[in-house]
Image 1: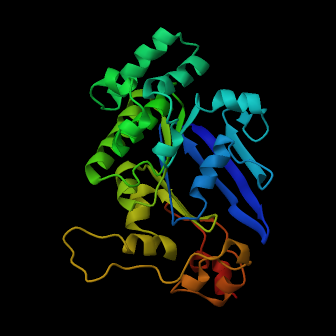
Image 2: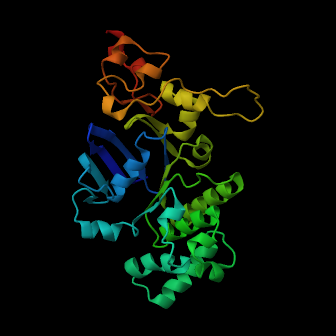
Image 3: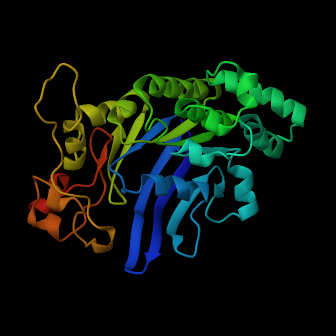
Length: 327
């Protein structure tokens, strides 16, 4: 499969009164055409900031992309004009945000909010855009489409709003859909419906999906490829089956160990000891060293590089680096 988007050495920083926060710290990955890539990790590890960087939504003066390249087709999204980025955003690359209630305009009907990108990017007339909006509402599995189109966001449930966000995001047939925690705070039935909507949308148009989540059940169900982030860095990535069956990084192993398993009764679920480090206090050490059961001396003084393993996985851990054996 051809690469749809390539992120090379992306760094996104935020300036605070106490210093610089490296929210995303020199990460590289790619998403192929028709592929679903899941980005996982605890809150604050840089997942959403990676998505916002791709969408061109990092606003100054405090936030800035400090370096790197985002190649989409023949364009570097970090070098094009704001006007050109506006033409791509919502048209070729769309995003579903975490909170549908705060993402939708409370005083504009659902129908008009779906129609807006169709009229802007597809040059549809009002009549054409309305007809397409009805189709999209039906496509994401919501009955009584015309009534829903004339409703306001506060009149719909959380699950309905999330599916409306999907309808808006796929309205222009994007090549890449970024979904940021699309099933958070939804009950399991609605969660399954939302994931099925995403899967059907992908199959119909060969769309690629970048899915941000902390739910490993969602990852197992949706992903072709998985990227594990910790404190702004990629610590492991690989094919979903390989990563679940043979996780290499102690952090990935900890995440999988903490997942409940049907049929197994435990008094207490496993949790990774310690806390995610303060982003203002990061040193040249491995960021995970003080939570790691396998910590070596080199882990406390040097950052591991992301290495390719024999099975195609990539992992940033001194356990697999020959250099560490000579320290």
